[in-house]
Image (cartoon, rainbow, N blue to C red):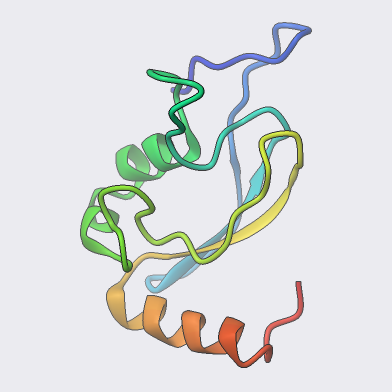
Length: 105
């Protein structure tokens, strides 16, 4: 379970919106970092949650140790939907779709 909380003490926990064997769509709450940052050492992040929830994701992506399965990011202050690849094949496919702009944000 994530231990980060917002100013009102509400836990910052991502919500799974849609899930397949290949990818997951999550709703990232505002206030939650996507991946570790030097400015917030030791702070729990979306990537921490993803690695715990989907252990196989630890090897997915261009930089799996830092951004496992992450296709794009949202700033800490932003909330919104994120697509996260659960397999390397899905990562490559989704990455191409983002680069070719065939996915609408």
